[in-house]
Image (cartoon, rainbow, N blue to C red; front, side, top):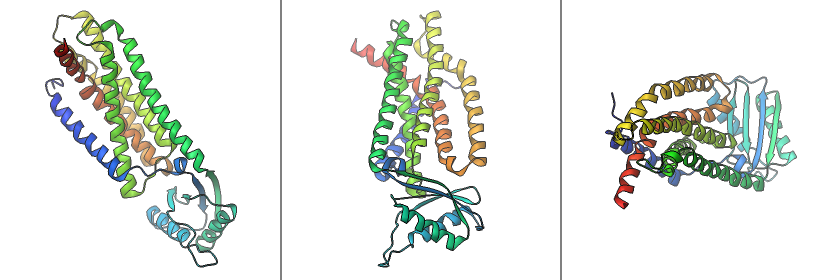
Length: 311
């Protein structure tokens, strides 16, 4: 039986390495923002006559074709085009804001190069809307974090007379959530740098989902700690924490495992446009399960030692 409290230095060291790597990737590479946040144009098309050897090669061919479009002065019109394959014949094309004439020019060039092309979707987002979406996304995440602290502090108010006050549970849960979010963001930063993966509104949905899933696991463990404190207040706090983790361990692993299995199936057999959304969810849920067991609960011991020193 693993003593998660006694081996906490191992888990904290591992988490520290992952968090430092994620923060480093974020500062060095940043996040590659999609048109949802920067503004631009999205065109989804179906190539009815074209048969490509592979989706990766298809995306590069389409990207090159569009970027080679020239105006009457023989100057290239489009740069930084992003193409995401969607199925065997479909592709999502993201580029700067284009006029209706430029849009038609793209469709005409693709039609001449690859045969019959049908436009399935056309969306345009202005830069001001993109900035507003950035602001609202950040506000939504911060609001969720504040709400979680308030809820946990209120829900565990009756154990404030125990080893640590109720707010320590809320702060520990938030630290674990920040750990999970940073790991997902670091992964997306690396994917953006090496593979050109952009983040969009689906990424914010993934982050909020990870927050909810992670705090759910954490509260289950905390609730068991609360029960044990009521029954065995005289027992050492570290023993109560370790016993509470083990009593919920199988449930946490089974819940996360079944969820991850479904997400992995969708990752391989679902649409290409959801691939990185699903990948962010998978990494976030695995990280959330780990942090609930190995980070959030052992953190309570540090609060106990810190508060006892102050007293």
